[in-house]
Length: 345
Image (cartoon, rainbow, N blue to C red):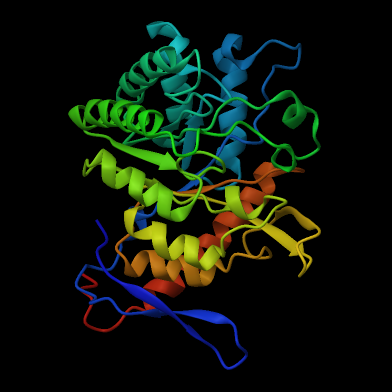
C-alpha cells in the first residue's frame, strides 16, 4: 500500500512538477539500501566460438562478470535473457555462483522475462518455470524475483531495429477470467517467494495487465501480498511510438508500490496532432525522464530497493556505468534534500 500521497502543481513556465505531501517519518537511507545494479542487457549471448552462454566454461563466464566489476559495479542482476540458471545442473550453478562472487559482485535479484503465466498454450509450463527459478534465486541469495506478463517477441519485433517499434502480443482486454488467472498464478509465485524470504516484483510492460499505471496498481492490489510489488520500468512505456501516459503520472501512481526498479531513459518527440512519434535510447541524464526528481520522490516515499541500470544499443555497459555514477549523485542529492526531521542515524 502507498506510504504517502503526492500531487502535481504547475511551475511558472506551465510545466508540471512534484509537490510532496507526505509526512517524513522514515529514516534516511543508508548507501547500501539502494544498490546500484548492472543489468546484463549488453552482455554477450554467445562465446567467441558461437556457443550459448548456457554452455560456456566458468572462465568464459568470469570474463563477463570481471568486465562488469571493472566498470565499478558491485551488484549485478542475473537474467535468463543471458543464461537460464534454472536449467543448469547443481554443479554448474555452484560454478556460476563462485564466478560471480570471485568478481566481487553481489546478486540482489533474478530477472525472468517473457514467460507470462497466461501465455496461450504455455501458461502452466511458464508457471512451473517460475517456481523453479524462485528456488534458484533463493539458492543464489537473491532477495528479489523480478518478472512480468510480457511474452516472447513476435517476428516483426525481432526484425525491427528497435523491437518496441513493432506491435507485440496483447493481453486480452476486458477478459475477467484471464485477469483472474494471472492474479492467481502470480499470487502463487508470490507466496512461494515469500516462503523463501524473497520479494516478487512485476515489471511495467505495454499491452499487458501491467501496461498502464492504474492497471498495474489494480493488479498488485488484487494479488494482495505484502511481498509482491511493482518494478516501475517507465522506460518500457515512454519509448513506444504511440500516445503514452506522462512519465510523471506513471511514477506518481506506481512508485508507492515499488519494490524493485529497472531505470533507463529515452529521448522522445511527437507531433501535436499525433501523426508521428519517435523515441531512441538515451543516458539516464539526457532522456525525457527527470531522474533527479523521480529518485527524490522515490526516496521520500520510502523506496530502498535496487536500482538496475538498463540501456539498449551501443556500448551498453559503459553507458550503464555512466548512469550508475549519475544515479549515485541523484541519491546523494535526494538524501540531502530530505527535511531535517528525518532520522539520519
